[in-house]
Length: 414
Image (cartoon, rainbow, N blue to C red; front, top):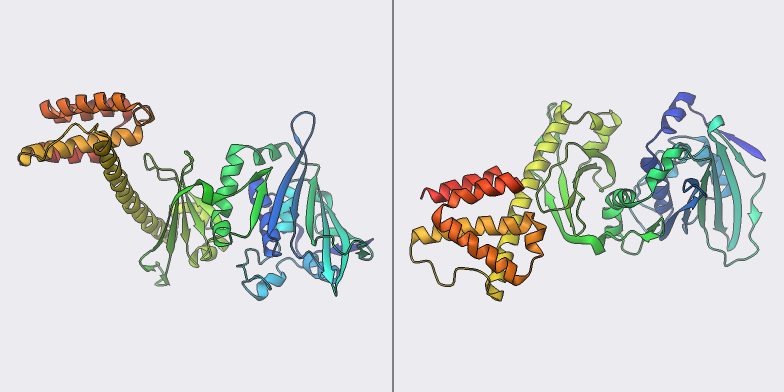
């Protein structure tokens, strides 16, 4: 057995080994994709008490060459990936460049084994590297590579993590799947031939998307005079509950979530703010400071303005579609064209109330046609008698938005 010793300060390794569990696991998944894997599986071994005994990240990438292992594991920051920004064969955009993933694995467990199979000159070879949290910076590697008897055996890597802490359970369940989807949505969308199977569930963002939108933001001038370009990608989800803005590099690789999150009633979304300037701010430790940084504040302001614009238009689109459907099925209470401006305003007020109720109140949206017809007819009568009264009722029961109230007051006074 040979030993590999990392040339770096021990306290730096300890900091890497204290990563958030999902951040650490994501790094290992990215490593697999960077090794040109077309399928990555994350598996959990469960013990009798329902806890996690082991975590495995299994991929079918090109594996790791025996001679390269000494270079890769010995030099933190000396990764082969720094020589370019795309994989050698499939030309996918690379994520990792600094070789931190293998050290972050120790935040998931005290013992980590890398079992790799690779191809060289038409023959398959395999070997194992092992590390322990008690001796960070030292890895044991087999004295020599072993020949794989079966030439058809697939290349790839299996990273097995054992002696896991109690918090590894946070890596399972609905919230974990949501977080994994947010992390890898753009990558899986960009490379549809790649599969990620997490805890038995295929991560397929396309099946959960309701809409995908890309925007180029106006050029920003930072406090030091630097001109910065940025883009915003917005994915709207069919699944309720997802919402948030994420800082990414220019390729869409997530760096950090942005807080606080913006809430748009009736919409579930993930928004990715992409800029080459964000990795610079990340290396300076500024992303976590949020709006205390002038640069972050400017980028966030631009992203939030675009988000508000986007969802204002989306809400108008939804309202138009809803009204068209009601007219088509015959439950819209106004039959003929408006007789005058006063009646036209009354209809505009009704439309605001009714479509917003449809958007924010699931019980109404899911009710029968006869139930909707009755509610809409009552709304029509109330709007004709006292249009602002409905706003007070909806605000009391359903938190009616202030900007909608302002719209109605303006129309009612015309």
